[in-house]
Image 1: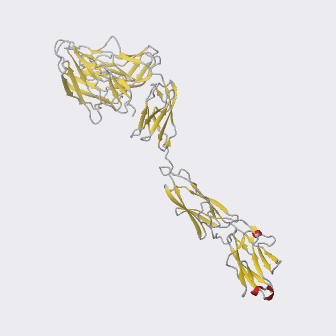
Image 2 (image 1 turned 90 degrees about the vertical axis):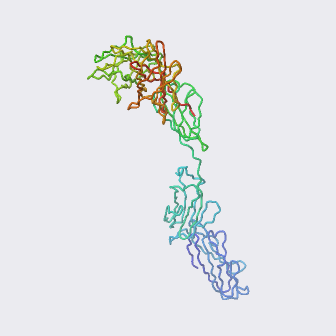
Length: 597
């Protein structure tokens, strides 16, 4: 008989000649390995009877027949490998005769090779009991390989295949070919990856080889979206902060719960408002030196990674700014320069350090920087040095950055600028307006020669109490007090009010500017004047203002309406009022951080 080589799943027709006087039975003992008879394929000689695994002669008498041929189909049922079966009966046993038969064994070579390059069948062996075919195995698709809420795969889904030696296999995901391989004579495994990531929901993986294929339907589930770390916007990384209890600013996921942790105090939790901008002020002072804060935000999906911010806290300086002198600075119209200034007194233990200084000329007085033809834009700090300033577009203000105020505890620094009176300057008493860091003061009194105040009027800051403005909050009303030092009523005057530089104060409210000046006399009567706004928006001028000063000892109060922008820096400052030829700072104005939500 022929001895075929059978590949995986392949079958062969085996024909056996039957000698006269013999019966024929087919057996597959344990030693037969992967060979089995295909049911229903046994064929016997004419007149013989097919009985299970054998052919019985006519009449059951094997001695009285002339022989013939028996044929049967056998197949290789193994999945992989090469098997060479040979034992007592071989892979197929054929018994002849009855009683103690003489067995003849036939050996079949069982081989997984596929000479034609066609794997005729597949099998999924992932253990989920779905239908499959022998020949190729597909690993289980991993449990939940999810996308985040932005549609990006958290991990690639890996699908593994194995095909027969010298076979060809393909893999598809959602109908798109992801890989195609031909294997060598040892077989091959390969993987395909769900790299692009399906949307959350069902997807299909197909493994195919030859004309057979198997389909797996899986589902990608969305994992919870853990929020990203919040962003700390203030203080900046590595910044120096002169406040032991600074307000920490940042952004995050609206509605999330933000928790700020800082050394020396219990963590503080706040809900992030709808605009995503949060602020937290530590409940206790931070120690001087390097400080590291951490912030996390939490939603129902979980807590974010930490945001960290390290900065240096410097013990806050405590100092006062007061007018320089005496003596007063005396100026002659068209004459030489004088040097009005302020005295800065260190009232704390720490040095004041570097500060920004701004100096503003009083409006309408005829004062100028330096002298005609030789402008002087410098600030002098006694025993420290000279600092060049930046002139504002309207020429009224000089700004000096990084001015070193190095006076020790209880020591003083003296600062001054050079000014003169133009040839047409009006006689009178006035002053410049100095802002040192977050403190403000008028300068040494400046008297322009020939001044005759008739009747004399004194101007001083309004209050107490101080005006408190919250960042982005409601309006406040800083002003000045007037007093008549003469016997005659005071005629109408020109009043100019200037905002302090670099403080983000504004007239009235956003969308509702207020350019009015209110005068309140001693009888409780108020009069309102509308002012002219300067081109840079920093000052208002009111012409013909009746100060309501009727005689000696009479008094009145003037004020304007201002508010602080949402991004205004916390500061103590004041506005500059020029009333006729008199000048004064307003009621002290303190800008405060907006309260946390």
